Length: 107
Length: 123
Image (cartoon, rainbow over all chains, first blue to last red):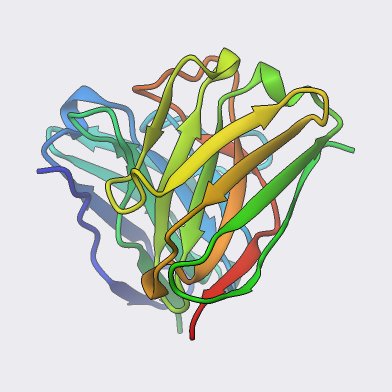
């Protein structure tokens, strides 16, 4: 498959842990990266190469990979983490692609 | 200041053409993989195209292949997207984005984004 599948939405209370998954057949062969987008602003990179965190991103953001699924984990979510999250990777034909996005609501 | 600034958006009729520009400042655009990403109103991100350093590798999403052309102008330190045969479903905010050092055609990600420019295709 040349698609990346994410859950459309997730609602959590402050302090809970968010685990946002991204699934795709090509994921074992390519790195996955994660972006946060708030209120239709430009996206911000939060995780790259499955599990690395850019400077300036809080350490409550982490990433992991297992087979055809990669996971963005936000430990102890805060109100400011409310946003859309997108995974990005490469398909088997070399085309880049984004997942459909997950809207995280912090209640 | 390191930044990307897109321009060229607007209203165009179906079948028409438009050229988007992305001006880079604070760095040499030719040293990086560059890409275009779009976002239709209320929808998610969609990768559109990328161009490698030296313009050696270029690729397009199937949805735009044959209609859009990505290219660079080193003298202007700018990236462009020529969009022809525009369709209503091309309506979106188009973002220009810079790949990180070490990008390859099989693995790249964007650490710098422009603010986006809106294209509306309607009759």
